[in-house]
Length: 103
Length: 486
Image (cartoon, rainbow over all chains, first blue to last red; front, side):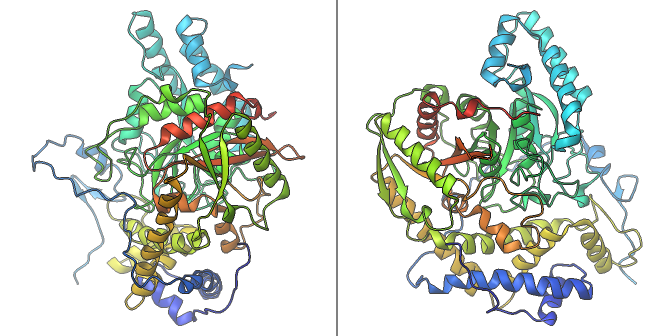
């Protein structure tokens, strides 16, 4: 159980860059090498799943299968707007303020 | 014994008899926090004013003859991923470093309504991603049994604080073992209830198909008390189960004669610390001595748990953590001039190393072309892991396993090797994948004086069986009475 293979799967710097872009993260060159090595090690370990035959197995999304609960679509007053707005990194009155997004 | 080392049920007794006031108790605990916090660093935020105010309120209502709630006047610690209205809630991350919760989550509110006195918000691995509490943006937590060791994670602050007497009990969250592992490494009882048993409304999401809320306590009686308050349906959490909550105190009966305990052979293999193995064998003997029957069982897909978990949990996390964009709340980079760089710079500067690693892993397994090979495959393997347990529970009341292959390890020992750290959770992860209740409880000490924990696993919604077996075991042993010298 404690033995695991490493290094079979190897992500390239380009692949790590692409993942970071999708995840909205910026990486330095040093980060690229570090994450390429570490993520590759984890992905190599994960490869053991391929030994498992799952051809006729249904996927499990949630451990407890309960039907989607419905509730009445009722409007409730929200009185604590200020409490939510106080966490804004930048605001103007009751608005969240962001840098200009349309040129 | 010092007040701060007593259990909830012992303290309730003293409070009810009027031998102590809740203000005295709170003062005592706050000064104990002050004395020990430099060494432990179990808290991210301490809330002495709020605590004393609440304590005084309970004293007054007691004097006025009002029936006290189940936790009236009891000092509690709340893990810092639970929203607490008006208090800072950081989730152990710089990205939420200044976040003030605009409301309290259901589970927290239930504890407060029952009279719990919140003394502070507890340190944790950033976004609950870690097994040692070393990924916290606010610094590591030290194990009160040996300050050079980790307390376990991700609810490491919760475990250290309760074990050291900085609060009488604490909340934790458990996605892959985050309640049970630190409880075991700090000599506590840690209960992860069935998925859906406790509401997660107002708890910051990590992996939504796995996260569950539960208590860390000094004994099984306290676990039953806390679970009673926490459990129950909540319309604000769509995964919350709408089923009756049993009277857990009724399970505190020291009788397990004829109960059948499954011992999975896959959990007893080479690699386990011999002292942990010896403690397990001793626990099995003790339970047999109480009239339980132990038999070897097989959970053949055990080995696939860690890979399945690190696909599903990271995929869900990458999606859940997409909300941290620096727009409406949380950290924002001030220099960014356009939208994409605002997102990227805020997230890059706000998230720590482990969180980024998991977001990227999750992003990768969900990216175009890989979904079937990773995510879908993992969901199918999850079915097989669940079926293993279902099979065993046809013939057994509970399953007994170790919580961790070793006792607490040294700070920094595993931080350089993420995979090694991930393997700390091999005995707890599958319980989350199957959605089952699991409870860790003290079952021995190493030669070096470090706590060892065992895990009881039950079928869905069978928390009562765990409590009853745990209680019976506790009545026959003394491990849970030991307190660290600090």
